[in-house]
Amino acid sequence: MTGEALLLGIATIAVAVAGFTAVTSTLVPPGGAWSPAMRIRQRAIVSTSFNVVFESLAPQVIFAGTGDTVASFRIASAGVAIYATGIVIWRARQMLRAGGPRTPVALILFVVGPLATLLFWANALIFASLAVFALALCLQLSIAVVSFYSLVSAAQS
Image (tube, rainbow, N blue to C red; front, side, top):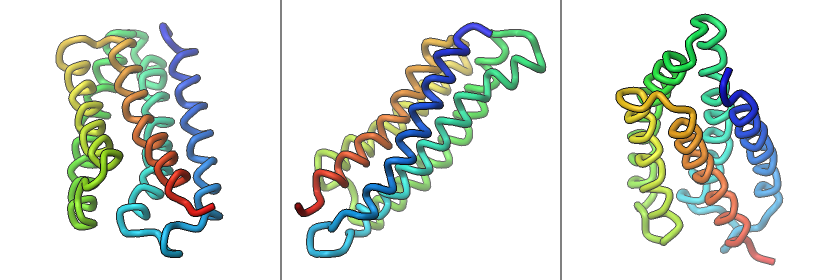
């Protein structure tokens, strides 16, 4: 399948990011306890990373059944778009209950998820492209990376 190495590479990076989340459990947050927003970020690192892993594999699994690269990206993008729409709504509600996007990092996280989801929808409906699919995966993975960095940088030394 076209792009198999790229998709497996993204999946591999996502697994590594999820593994690094263990580092954050050893850190001491400001005030000695993680705020609700920071706890959401910690969970988002793992869940987003594993979502990216399985989403990276989806076109390849579909291709194994169809033998059609374009259909594989279109079907995988549609499935991910539907799932991601639900996740974005759920995470937005969690974030709003935790106080909303009050920091630049939180605002970035509040925007990037919907942007990645829109790219998956566009890929399902218009492009059916490896490039758009991979870009959406990378944007989605950036949520985990930014969340990880924000937790590490917020910890007391």
